[in-house]
Image (cartoon, rainbow, N blue to C red; front, side, top):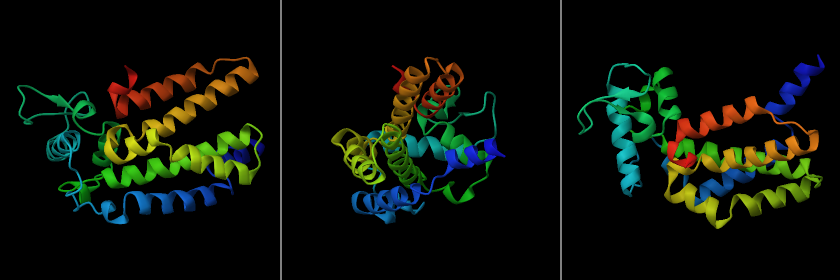
Length: 204
């Protein structure tokens, strides 16, 4: 019973509600809710956005290949991987779930919103774990989550935006490992898998 309670607490804490509210306001001001519309592709302006969007279109319309994530026909001889030409595991998940609404549109806006919310939640949790009060943690979360580095990646380089929450998780794992004098190798491997699966360039 205690294990189930702890698992639920890990997935969602009462204080997360405030982080979600603040993150949503930040996203609305910084990005604009109109970017959540799959049909709105006008804001995908730089070359990485174009490549990722086209990669998703080819991947979504192609049949499944081995290994999962491979597709063909995208101006290249042979097959390409959506990990290198799109949003990696995110795009694979959308195709597995048969999320047809984005087949001819974009899901970058939704991923950006989720990465912002997760960043606010995890940053506040980390600060509370370090001993700050709930109010201090929320203020600190706003300051850290809106730093120029995170703002820049979230607004301009969306394929790197998911790296911000993963960085916070990495810091949390390191701190817990130091406190408990242990190295949670499985958790680190999962974290590396997620980072490489979303954007392999983040591992270099």
